[in-house]
Length: 372
Image 1 (cartoon, rainbow, N blue to C red):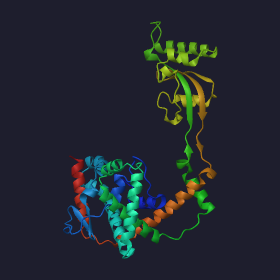
Image 2: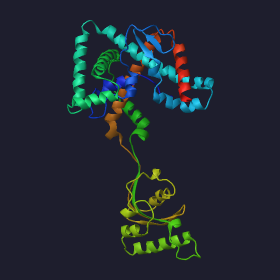
Image 3: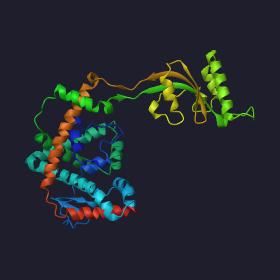
């Protein structure tokens, strides 16, 4: 796991807001883990075992040791002794811990700078978000409540979560650098950087196929191989197709392959995704135009006859069409960097005397659970 744990979820909220989305929960368990609810105050001091005190809140070992994390580390833990596992896993556990610590400190800092009369405004904003959430389920309160339960929350938890988001949004917005115009050269450079990954439309092929599998062919002449007789049948079918016979009818009658019952008509497919022995069809399609036939094509005990219906080469969306999206990406990355700087600064201010003991406990527990 080399994923950077950060406050990026808050950046997303700053950019996109918090709209509902039907039955799809707006906050995943992973997001909830990145931005935890307030913990009970008055807990005993951290012992280095199960909890780590961060001001008047805590991070528990259970918040770190999730099922997802265990599944990720299982192959590493089962393939090495504890000392080697610890070396590999410690950086990720420390990053995850410091992400949670930073989120707690961010909330505490936001509360500190919010002023005396912020509670009423935050309460109203949180209530508005609760109403939006219900509206996202077409006003069905029961469905919305069920979605919250799936995320491990009740209405009180959700409202408290929204309060934290509102406060942290306000604090982060106040610390953001002044808006700087995105230049044309920045747009072009970012487009060139991401176009081959973000704006590609894959190549597609659409064709009909008669797939004669030699091993399934009825033997008409026991003195000749199945493959030889399959090729002979394919040559006969090619002649009949050139004479004008219907491809679909011949595919239904003679094909052993995929979608024979549909006249051998394949759904549009990316040629790069064709597995053996069908991958040979991509090269054949390059040599012909839609409406033309290719075959017989011998590959892995199969004899193919293909009728090409359509082919679209791989293409990249032009800059003019995606310019707004590129600009949004640049703005998002700027804000993400600013949030990372805030997060790093806050984490650096944290006095965590029992951090190493806590991390050591988590590592031991994860290793044990992975080897059960």
